[in-house]
Image (cartoon, helix red, strand yellow):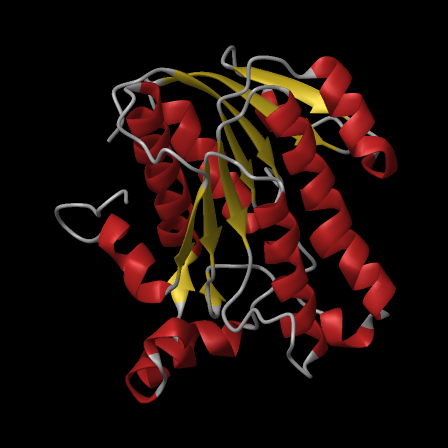
Length: 237
């Protein structure tokens, strides 16, 4: 774990994974300040460490660039969730790409060196599957911002998620043995811990001058994320 203090900015705190990230960051002594970006007031954010920023999502980048300062780590756990197959691709792209990319761009303008972006297993800009194609483009947009360290987190089925049908929460752990590891199920708190711990370690390395000399991208699939909730933690590089 990083021993370097930092300010974090979070998009998606009212969601399942984002809520877990919020709780983890509130417990982290090295997270001295947490800027939480929301569309409406949230009573649960009444914590002295938290600076809530209520924004118009369609003007997200402009508003955050003016109001957020001194950011070190940005974490985006924001997306469509269940129902993307029934949505027009334009709408899916706005939620999955436009808003998270605007958030990330504003975070970088505010000083962030590390970005953690939740995407999905199977992300591929060249895919014939709409959602996989959109998520591939989401990853490309994040890469284009050239953060000092970018972590792309690709979960399969997310357990403990209100968007995941109850039956899948029961069945998926039983089927993991038959699936490629990248599609193994992962719990919300495991995914959140991976995003927080990898980001802290990457920022700690950068702050101490031992991080990558050029912008670095790490794509984390199940086996990579598993290291962060297994005994002994994981390798930040």
